[in-house]
Length: 321
Image (cartoon, rainbow, N blue to C red):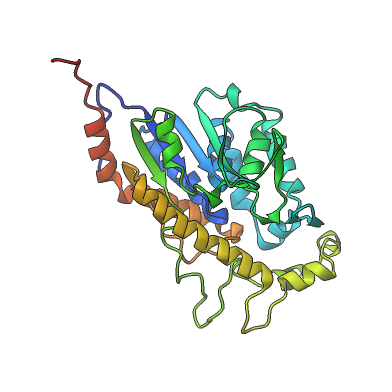
């Protein structure tokens, strides 16, 4: 096992937590492993699920989030879905917001001791928006507003959606906030061509037939929340993807392509890439293995972490010396 030794002069470390929907549970494993080796970021920037995990970590509620994630089953996950079919999205996200609000209350970003930014996208201009103050829950909810899935959020008279549309792995934001060394966690490096289940030519995003799970549930409240229109959205023929599957799979491709482009021009100093290509974007019930892969991904780059900290940990020389 490679030991990461802190230099006498410590560089300012930025951690960029990327988007990836359910694959974002890997961020919990990454943060745990980094902490095990004594690496605590001085800046955390997150996009989409990266903003959720990063913000909750800084709020000191990571253990509660992990326990909740590990408790999710297919049926329980579905129980958090509130179909609305209006206001620009098919899901309201109210149950998820209530869960976050229960843990964080009215905490403000500026109350955190470590700088934190949640990345979002302006729906009108396409501009990248950095949420660095105000209500924590609102900022995280805004950052994961998947277009067409969750309704957009209004902030300072602008309609904002998921930051993954412009900056899926926000390395640039870490550097803008003064990070001298940036660690990036890219959840989309292993997805193209791997979303299909063995023996199937149809891409799946949940790893199971969501509509069948809802209709087969014995819980009446779950059944009552899905109407005829929702049934059409989630229904699919054995040889064809559902409308929902097409939307989410398309988002995964967009995230992958944009990530490649942004990271080529703004490479991190250490690139952590969990191997999650076999995990559907909505398989939130696979938290155990996703978190474990996050930890394993850190173990694989320990030599790079060691080298980067050694290099960036060299104390700057005064001018003229």
